[in-house]
Image (cartoon, rainbow, N blue to C red):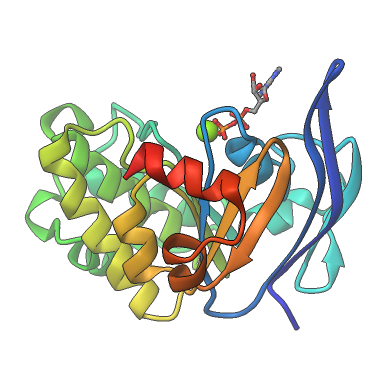
Length: 240
Ligand code: ADP
Ligand code: MG
């Protein structure tokens, strides 16, 4: 069974139809890079997956269950999301940020979640920073804490919305490295990104979103090296 199935998804904001019929199946272990110009609908698509935006029509199923207003909270726990801005809680330490949801949402014991939180900090190469507050961390470190926090609920899929776009260039690599390790570990991921080299090296599939439609969907060597569509070629010429 696919982890995620999107069927004929449409989303309009007023008279602006942003998604014009998206069909997509994401299987276990797929690493999908979502590329496309600013305004093409990447964020809206990711946000429709866990109903941060309600689709205008069409829908999303998660492991075979349609995502509805009724079950969305249960499903959100299984979908990790990392945004461009890290949105860490400023008054909590790195470890406190990571363990908050497991404690509050899953009501698990302090000791157990702290041990798992430390393992996650190690996974994102921040084991020395468990007591640091977000204000004491660089943007790249904060984003890695945000990734660890999303992983703390043991999600079935991780959605990344331009996770390195807000970072100084010298901090991008450390975040991409953590994401690369995560992909290698078999995590199912959708990554909206302008990092074409990352998409080429890490993604199992690349989707080119253009004007609210998936114009190309294929392995990186096809979509990024030999695109079928002139619009994909134009886009790549602009970003590469
Ligand atoms: P991308 O992430 O590819 O840059 P977005 O999904 O953010 O694209 O935006 C696609 C279009 O949807 C843009 O025209 C944007 O202005 C519009 N849009 C996104 N969110 C909203 C919103 N909450 N209200 C109105 N328009 C929106
Ligand atoms: Mg966006």
